[in-house]
Length: 72
Image (cartoon, rainbow, N blue to C red; front, top):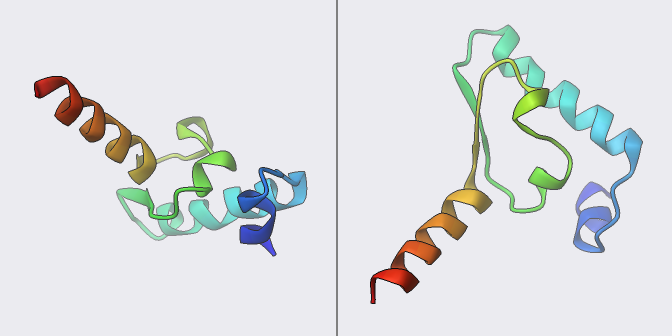
């Protein structure tokens, strides 16, 4: 259901709250960071929502694409 919401551009507050809880679990077990491996997940969370490093793959791809486009 979460993916169906996000693919339609809908952000349900219940989903946002649930995902914030999910990304908090690894930090509680000692993780150094979280990788947002699904491009839509950044719609639910931000760096401010985590006590550990957040690696947003969407942002990484966008920065790399811009660098490649500007280098040519």
